[in-house]
Length: 487
Ligand SMILES: Nc1ncnc2c1ncn2[C@@H]1O[C@H](COP(=O)(O)OP(=O)(O)OP(=O)(O)O)[C@@H](O)[C@H]1O
Image (cartoon, rainbow, N blue to C red; front, side, top):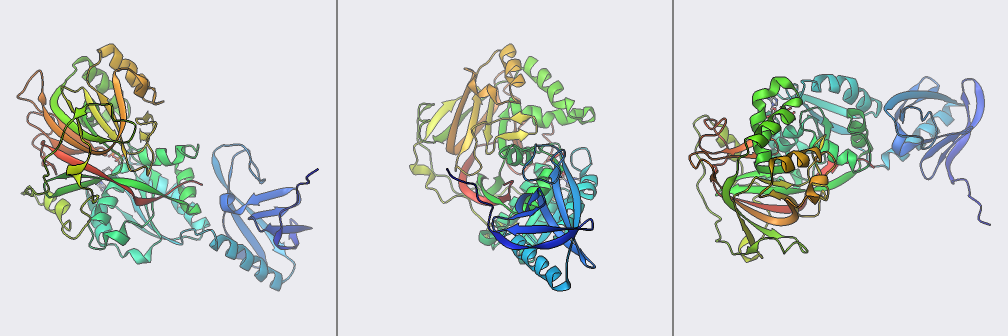
């Protein structure tokens, strides 16, 4: 019969805990064991400090779990416990062994932290003080903090940050700041190394789709504490980046693009911001009852297995175009640096197997990760780095059918509806047209929660946008960016 053997000891000695001498062991597989207790260093120990002759271990454990290996999932709480080695030499040996083990985990030591005090419910500064700062301090991580002061400030910072000084950039914000950082990194002359910088997100905005996608992939709740813990633990995963281009103008997206119903709801519901999160449901119902359809056309290169959708077509190669001039300088900033920066995936767009679907459309939605927000599982099959975008297309559907689809958005059930076509694409062309009930009115294009283009007669049509409401190309680069992720 096989016997379970105790894990091999890396270091073991008698120590005093609450005045009682007991044997404590740090095992080779990273457990700190004493009496009938055990802490998994990688998951539960943030760091330690020496207080005179004592060592204070700073941990984060799930409520109800106490200090023992594993335990039930619950809210995370910080807990300290102290032990006392029996001599100065042993104190040094305990510190060296613990520190060496923690160092072997590849955790970040210096982080640049961006806090958007303006995002979401304006709670990012409080989240920073309540969760981010104390946990990073417990983990002995050196931090440089910068509050964003205006739109595109985070992008400006990412464009000029001295990256070798940091092991990662953390965004205490919604998805908007993360997207700005990625755009800044990719517009740098040294974008190839810049984009390898690990990025972390702590949910503090209205749209926390990336934080939710990361934490949910490890079955963890989308809370600031869980997000900070995953950053401290230092595990990484790669993330696909989509390049949206119109002529020479480019935008780099990591979350989603929406045109039609979803884009209209996301952007136009801002009129009802005072309602809080209810604004989305409220405006969605309004939009569904006064349903719009848009003329236009989409072309796409389906992933293997999805070739049945649409009809065969070919495309013209259009790699050049005009930079849209701006009067207020905003677009200049967005375009700046792109000549030396990343130019999009190096794909011969023309020689791919293109397919085409003509409008009118109710909704076109492209998603890079499963969750678009904390309650919206837009693309249940989306993977962080499969090199594809998930396309969720609705051409025709009754109002009642659309209301039913909405109720399924929180569990991803909408993609099984016969009214929804759900497939993966490698490249995509959007040729947006006017509304089919009123050709004098066009639509809007929403990328990662921001207005990317607005056509004639739309909400905020007088606002300067990066792209025109015209044909745009999208391609995807597999695993270009890096994110801190839960274990
Ligand atoms: N100090 C500031 N004042 C105004 N806008 C800002 C400031 N700092 C950042 N922003 C802008 O706030 C936007 C939203 O950022 P964030 O990612 O935190 O939240 P979000 O969930 O994407 O959006 P929101 O919560 O505003 O709906 C970003 O596009 C950013 O440019």
